Image (cartoon, rainbow over all chains, first blue to last red; front, side, top):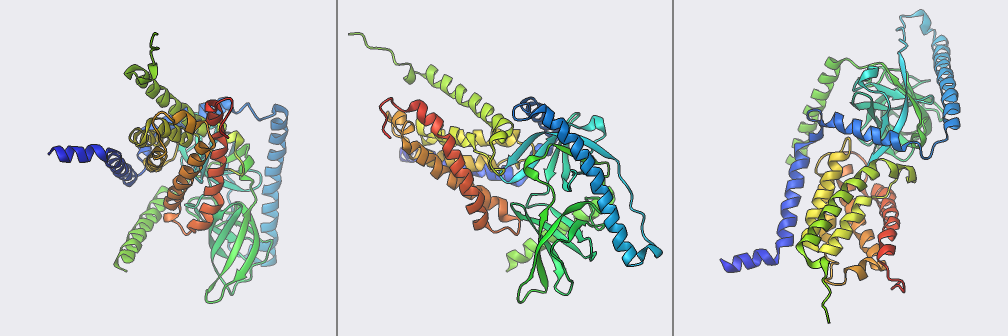
Length: 288
Length: 177
């Protein structure tokens, strides 16, 4: 027995290490427990207040107000350009004579970025708008240039936006000119990959990429980025399309929250199906 | 000749040190989520909590180091708005174990005050980021190596730059560099 205790004493670091690793893995397997109760809301509120307090440091008040007015003007111009381009394409194809869906305009709520957090490569921005401004989880966020992300947490006065430069985000997108739909994924830096575009479809460099009406998370027709490269790979039925986002994620200051929340029933069906597919894939992988 | 009382070896001094570590862990975690962002380069930020974790492990040894790593990671996970609880705890526990290997009784100040401390931080940070990025890309189509080489190494180097500050604090006037 004494030998046993001596053995434990001798290697206590490694026993402690093993126990702590097991606890950590158990916590990870439980998932995001911070989502439970009001804890997450409390963290967002507290960190948001601290970030707002510290936000005075690098900013010049004059430049901020000038930037604000410029960006608001840019946003208006961006709407106009998007509408004009859309109208031109639709006219060219004589689709205006057909049953075109009326594209709804959404209400935009402007917000200041008061904090930025990066957990590894997951990027989040804290905005100074919260439940009191009718902000809800799931609302899309854009700036004057294009899509930024989606609200993932809200407290009374602050909200947390998950940026689209995140490997977990997949966006149903389409190329504006050809109206081809695909799935947009971040691949690092300022580069996205537009997947599922067949080789037979012509994709032009410089084409604008917008959110698709198939998206259950983002409203349709929001500008995302521009096609920078399109090439084919032997043996692949799809072409590889590289997209550069319009928005500069490193220096976001003023953003606009779109007062649009997707249908919860639609979202529940999609996420339920995604979960089932994920389980099926992991089972198939294990069998292999 | 009177023997001078050395407070470092008493339990009280040890407890005070542990309280200082705990407070530092909270302050650095909050700083990592708020003000440190202003010195980010291309979105990459130094990991100040990792430096603290290495510092504790080198000073107190491997046993304390793994516990310190676990709790520092856990504090950071809880304060991070959207972190998966446990990832920081796991990676920082590994850092505590690695850095604890370099603990030498009565030579801690010498190690922290020399370039060795930077090498320990760099090595621990590379292992930390390798584990973190492995977990990060696991559920996606991203390739581990390009991501790790692009971001992991850069974060490790940036973190090492900040490890210079504790090193300078502990470096003797006529240093070992």
